[in-house]
Image (cartoon, rainbow, N blue to C red; front, top):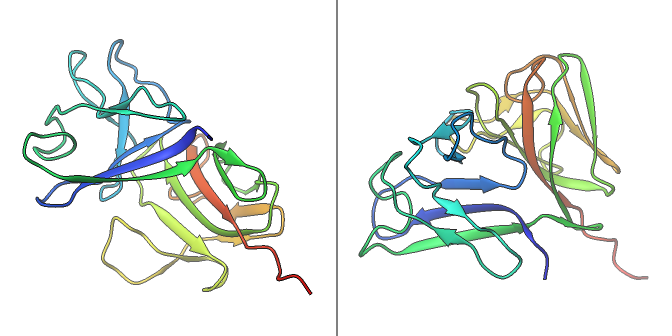
Length: 193
């Protein structure tokens, strides 16, 4: 079994946020607490008080722990009486998926995934910004933002046969000094002749 690279949890029978854990999310500046992201929000990282547990932790190739805290919202994960769904992405599976990180440089960042990339989700973990999703069906620079209800935006990103390239200085994908997490999924191999 592969270790998870990203997990998203969401309540299904109550309103609540999409809580996100990623293997490369930078550590909390507060000793004893851990950061998390929220898919339906622009925060770079959220931190609870030192005594507040991280909503998703102890991630292994066979299990993970969810802990109710109520810091972000009252139904985030593991509240009594609520039902939840969890979506998991493998950390790194050759020619299939890669969860990783890169640093923005305000010009051009080439991110190598090692495969023909058909879909990528990107989030700035240093400053507030939108989540960005790109795919090979809608063309270059067409970003969808899962934290917004708007139409697609023009944010520079091009998928390639070896990864993806972000250009310019957008906070969402390539700001100087910002760290980003991503999940990239490979295009399926061509059918056998």
